[in-house]
Image (cartoon, rainbow, N blue to C red; front, side, top):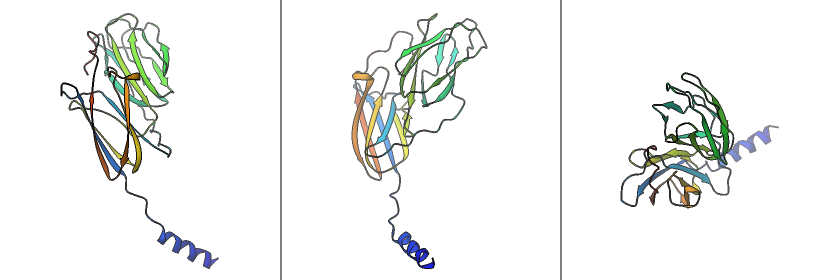
Length: 208
């Protein structure tokens, strides 16, 4: 029994420590050089299981001033998202997106509804009463997901080194499925730049 313990201890001492986690920095710019905000960056591990994101609470898309706020939300799979109405008029929120089809019948000021998003992918939101209201929810199954800021930048920490895929999604990206991907051999860190072509947003929609 003691010999087994000693051998196990020796084996443990000889085991190589796991490689340190890496960081991924992504920059996204339009063809005119301007930074692109509200682009979703998803990193997935190649040949290994990608950790799923933790489901938290407090996810919400408000209806306020006849607009959705925020314009883009990133939530984990199985998140419950609230849709509170803060306007003095009624709204009817819906989506026909493959990742989540739903319709919230007319409801008035200070009323609330919630929807569970149980499938990964982008979800386009609209209001059956107010056509100018548009927004998007990106439902992710990767713990390594971020959204670009006003400077077109996103950073993801804690990614295991090795081969990874980096997927970029934006609601107005001129590409199949509004997304593009590339593979990267990730060491201690990686810095990736994307130059993208965008469609103009519909009138009165959120900013990109």
